[in-house]
Length: 257
Image (cartoon, rainbow, N blue to C red; front, side):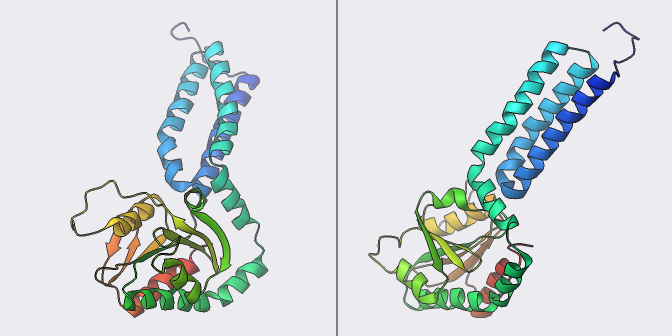
């Protein structure tokens, strides 16, 4: 482009620019809603691509513009495939009616009581366990590492899952609303240094999953019988019954909020 020459503002060029920006913003907002941790990781790359397109548009590099437009189109399809588990979980949440929301709200106290009772029974019996409660960010990508279930939350069920020598006792249990939808699940360990080296795999997994999602994780130590709660990568140790119930209630109440 010759210095001083005005930028091409023809309607077709402007329409292409607007479409690219809308597609990029739309894809990112969808991923931000249903796959928040990984969406943040691709934000820098997405912004870089949009910046390159703006430069190509301003400099009238038509071939480069065409390549980037094609990449945006196929990139949106690729993102839908890559984030398919999270999208499925997100669409399931969006599809719930207000009546279902109200029914779930009425059952919150029962869900809190059942989970808290199970955790306290595990602690009294010196049985280790880790329970992860889903909030707004879906946990479907983790359930693939364990066994998918579809069972109503209950203290007896949770205690049975973590009973020694059971096939699922070593992994984590995933809960969404009033449903246990995964057991024996392997969670990512935190990659950051942990101050207390006495913390075992369950505690590190609880920290790791809450660093990547907005879930809360409850850990029962089989060595000390202490109950710990992890939120946003922070581990609160030796939690009593009242604090445990408050943490569970906050997670259940904000799951669809």
